[in-house]
Structure formats: C-alpha cells, structure tokens
Image 1: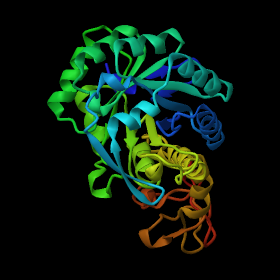
Image 2: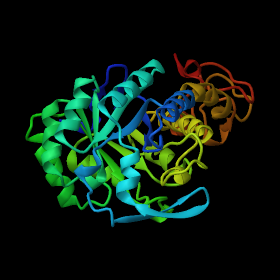
Image 3: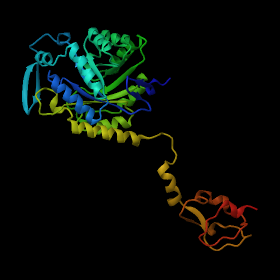
Image 4: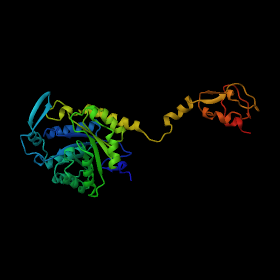
Length: 354
C-alpha cells in the first residue's frame, strides 16, 4: 500500500494526496514570552492564509541546565551573545498559556500544534485537544519521546534535519511499533538561513520512496522559491518561521517571514499546486479549442472530381484542425473520392463513403 499518498485529517482540515498543502506559520519562540504579541502573530498568520500555527511547549530543563552554554545570534542588527538557558526560559509556555493559544488559533480558523520535549508535554497537548504533535530535528534520536508520540494516537510530524538515513529509519521504526500510522516526515536542513546549495529538495522524493509516508518541508531558506519547488515535488506540508516584525528582539526574528511575505508564499504555493495538475497526458480543457483552431487538417490541393483517386500531391495541410489530421495522410492517399472537393476544402470520411 502506498502510504505516502494517504490523507490525514485534523479537526478542521485534510491534507495529503489530493488536498492542498498544509502551510504552517512556525511562531516558535517569536512571541518572546509575551502573550499579547503571540495573539497578534496568530491573527497575522491567519490573515496571511496559513493553515496552522506552531509553538514550542518545552520545559527548558528538559534539554539544558548549563548556563555556560552560550548562543550568538543576530537581533535588531546587532550581534547578541547570551546563555541558551536564558533565551529559552523567558519564552517558556505554561499549560494555561498553551491552551489559550490553541483557543485563539481556532478562533481565527487555524489549527494549532506544538513541539513538546517530554511525555508530560505530549499529554498536555492531547488533553487540550490538539490533533498534531511535532518532534523537532534536535529530538529525532529521542526515541522514548517518539514512542510516546506514537502511543498518543496523534498525527506525528518528525523533522529530519541533521539526520542520517539510519537515524531516520530508527525513529520511524520506533514510531511504527506503536501501531500509529499517522506519521509525516519533514525534509529539513538545520541551518539558519539555509543557503540554496544545501536545500536539496529532491530528498523529499527520497523520503517518500524509502519510508512510504507523506513528506513535507521545513523551510529555513530565504524567500518562497524552495517552498514552491517542494510543493511541485509533492510536499504535503510547508513550514516557515514566522514573525510579526523582523526587527523585534530575539534570535529567530531576523530570518523569519513577516506577514506580507507569508501571504506571498501561501499565494505562490496555491498557484504552484494548480500548476502541478494531473499526471495523465491529455489535452486540457483550455487546449481543446486550441486543437481546433491551431492544429492542421488535410485539405485538397486542387479541385478534385468524384471518382478520382487521391494522390499524395493532392493533399495540403491547413488550419483549422477539425478534419482528417496530417498523421492520417497515408490512409487517404490512393482512395477514390465519392464526392467532389474544391481546392482548400477539408477531406472528411464522408468524401470516401460509398
């Protein structure tokens, strides 16, 4: 069975084969710990045409204690260096905040999902009614967490940045052992921003073939080009970092899309979907009239009387294309006309019918 073409359903939307690409505005920690800003970002994502917003429902101590581990990043055109612990701690969300963000997203017609860092975090998302849970690339080897995601019964998205095929295979195997078949893999390259030569969009096709699951794209490149390419290659999910304003303070704002850019990306993805079309080769509806207007027909090269035999030199090819096509010239050459033809008149079957 081709699981890569399956349909997945949230409370309000379907995505996968035959459905529009699921576009996710990844707010992540771009709310800066400010619920007011988070609400504004949700509203802006909805206005831009996103299908879902994603946050991070981590506990800082789940992955970092050491305050000597520093992060250097760009913010407001300045180089900032500070402890990773401090960055994450100030953007940590409580259960109540996560619930309120989900309510706000749904009020704007958006799905809501998040990236937890513990089994308890998964349980919170399930308890508040989330349909989707996301595992970050940094947690791909955390098989205990992936197993818990599978056991939750939720649609699970595994991001594959920085991973080897063996690591992805192990994560997928652990997930499938739970009996949950609602799995999506995201092609991802974990660099910010991602240079074009590292995008490697063809890996989307590789992941679909090797793991037989729906595949999406976590896009860290600049602009919309990669997302359009991913859509054409069959990605069912496009995820893009999103901010209300790239000039806001924080490590992720500067490379995130603003509302206008996200709106353009969504429009471009929707246009690309229409362009992908069907694999069946047949004239499109708009081409049918073109076949009549612009194709050629076999016409008489001279006045020909009934009873004469048609010679090859008696045939010219002229528009419109509603008569006998040039490819059938050999079939009418040597036949005897049953009706006369004027020069320039199309040959038809009726001219040869006794």
